[in-house]
Image (cartoon, rainbow, N blue to C red):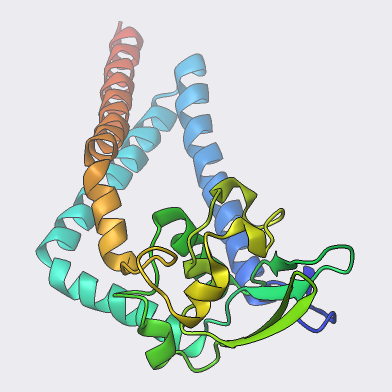
Length: 256
């Protein structure tokens, strides 16, 4: 079980064990499937075993069909998909989000940002930093709805302790350099952390919701996403055609 340091200096569980176990099983399962598919295709081609090539072709066809089906269903039921996704994400803000922590650094006169230790908070904090956004729809989502978020911070600036009842999470505050997050980030790494936490504005805080920010990001790089999907589909089709052709040629040789 992974451990991490909590806000009070105590050793706590860093990640839910069930989440780690599920992730491990998924990775093991996915790796096993990839190995089996690769083995069937490679060994079947090398040893000219038609049965292996046929099974390989069927598996690739089923995967390709499942991908197409999922894509079509996601498009046809896009409103339902959107509703389910936003409902889930909104519930994580309401019931799960705890947020980053600010702790005083004994050797300095500033505070250090301590990374979130639970997966839901870490996911939201990463999204805030990477996509320059805050909350699901806007920066008020946390102050209006979050129930377990600790919105009260005490940290040190220039030797003085400052107590702030915040309106947004620390990760919603604009950074001078994202590359410092989270290991080398102190309060001096923000544009204006005290202003952001107490009176968020466009200058010091990401105000846009992450839902629209992610959509903008996908739209901006849609060509690359489409190209990647088309490349994967093309490789799968080429693999199926090559396996079928080889299966046919082996059959002709056996007949002769």
